[in-house]
Amino acid sequence: MNSSFLSRRRGSLAISVAILKASKKGILKTHLIYSISLSHEQINRYLRFLEANGFLENNDNLYKTTEKGVELITEFESSPLTRSILIT
Image (cartoon, rainbow, N blue to C red; front, side, top):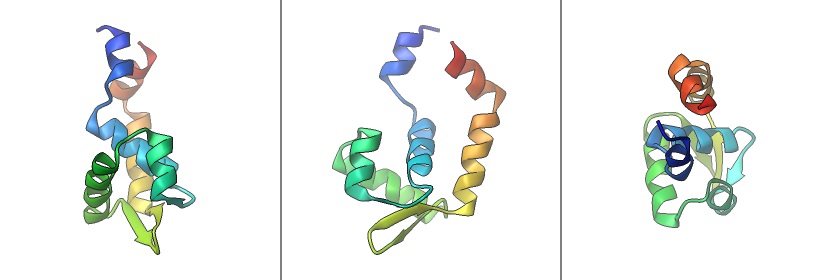
């Protein structure tokens, strides 16, 4: 698989994990948009999904990864498939 293709286009799971990693200590939406490089519309879709599924919480516009979200990060990073894709 062409690694330049992978670097240009991220999958939904990779984006979700990036959001969760950036939100571990708490982050404002504006900072999240810039750190993850997504549009306002895109970030809203991901935030709604992550909140609805218990991976992320929002307290006074401060987004923070939940324990369930931390578990998802760990699973994603320890996956042999993920490691093989990120290494190539």
